[in-house]
Every structure is written in structure tokens, then in C-alpha cells.
Length: 362
Image 1 (cartoon, rainbow, N blue to C red):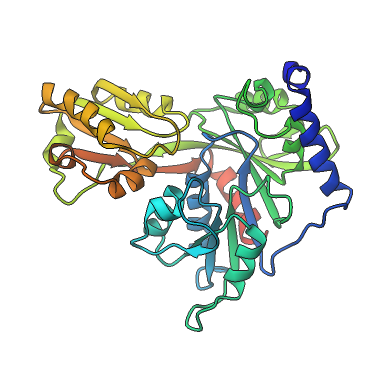
Image 2: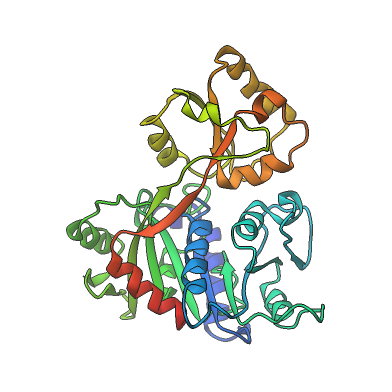
């Protein structure tokens, strides 16, 4: 494709890196306990965090793992801290990253840690320094598919239905951060951000476009071009009721007919469509992914609010972690700031049941 020509040195470097691991020239390790990796080959926007949370709900509600010690290990993208760190309930998104803090707040019983060295991170989770901290029995690896030094027992790769990898290009021409054929190294492919009404024909067509053969929407299996059998599932995003970001948030603003949206995520199109059906969106402030909100950002949003004093200000659950730690959030914004929690859910109960079986026995 075009990117392999224009970006040949980058493409060649990726091929060389993966070949070193595939041929055993660089050693690959496994953790001492079962591990499930949630990753992608795209730079952001596939919904890793909602799917990590989906896996945690399945594990915590299962007979096999409900009473065991479950942990999540993340890189902690763009955090200020370094090395291994466990995330506390009152942890800072600045020091630990917004996704790990979000997960810890939603699942207090789960140990959440960050470490760029995932091999060392798994070892520390299995052998905690503190005597009163139990060792992990199961580790969910957040965004570790490109971390080749560690091989998960189950590799789950996410693909955005609205931006499929088979039509995308390598960075910076597109959003691919890895080779397309790496998709076939997954054990499970989850196609995310689908419509809830996605039918069997659409699933079969999308699987075929990805290059998968013999996809069966009843047993959820397909064959890769390399002959490997792989599980394929389809999920959608469900938005839940707005939650106040600050204690002084006034619930009356939720019933406003006008809204201002501020986001720092990879793609906010689905959220805009969802909110557009309920509110008149006066302005959408679309900041870069993982954006650290500044006093100037708040001043720009505040200028719109002053012109529309009854409007509610909305943001995402992920952004809420960074805004909560931001200094000098104006009072006028604090009282009308709300975030929208989201959940990933399977398009069909059959997919949920099949996926659950993969997770509880990786």
C-alpha cells in the first residue's frame, strides 16, 4: 500500500523489530499468573479502557475469579511519574495517568498499577513489597500488544468499526502504529463502536473486509490469511446518565436544552451524535488526546458559558480525571460541569457469553 512506499524506513523498522521476537533473537517472557492483554494496532480511539472495565466486570461476577486478587497493569500514558506505582483511590491523573485513575475509582477492589516495564510490573504485582498486600492472581494488561517482551495468555486486539484497519495507513499518514498483519497475531478481535442494530450480514462483510475467512456469526470464529483460527466479536458503546464532576455541581443544569462539550480524546464523533439528540450543542471544544487543561482553556469555555448562562458543560469520563486535578477551575464552570460514563457491551448475548468463556479461562 501507499504507506509501505512513502514510509518504507518506518515499515522496515517495524518488520525487523517483530522478526527479532518471532525468530527468538529477543526473548519473550510470561507472567506467573494468567494475563489478558487489551490492545490495538491503532493510535488511540478504539475504546481500550471501556473494554478493560468490561473484562473486570466479567471477572468480578464470575465464580472462578470473584474472590481472587485481580490487578490491572497500565503504562500510564503521559503521566509525570516514572517506574512502578500503585494507583490509590485518591490518585492523581497527573502522576498515574487518567485511565488508571478512572479504573481504580470504578473498581476499588482491583489493584491498579502503572509501569512502562510491563515485565517488572507483573513481577511486582505478583510479589508485592508490602506484607499486607496480597499477590495478584490475574492481571489485565492495558495497551500492551506492542510490548513484545511480555506474552499474554490471551491477546485481545480492538478495531474501530468506523475506522477499520484495512483502509488505514501507518503514522503519520494514518493512525496505524503497527503493521496490519499484526492483527493476525491476536487471539481475539473485538470490533468496537458498532451500532446496536448491527446485523449478521454487516458483521460478515466487515470480517471479510478485514481479510478474515469463513467468519461464522454463530460460533464467532474466523480464519486468518495465515490459517489461524481467531475469535471475532462486535461491541457497542452505551452512554450512562451524567454524573457531577465536583461537589458543587448543580443538577438543575442537566435539564438545560443547551450544552457545551469539552473533550481531550482521540475521537468524539459518536459522543457528539449522542448529545446532539438531547441538547443544542453550542460549542464543541475538541482538544488533543490526553490534553492537560489549562487556565486559558477554561477561560475560552467560560466565555461561551457567560453568553449562555443556562447551558450545561459536559465532558468525558476520561477527561474528568484530568479536569478534577486541574488547578483554578472557575466556580462558574464547577457548578455546571458533568461527565458521561460509558460502558462497552456486546451486540448480542451470544457474543457476551462466548467472550466470557475466553476471559475466565484464558
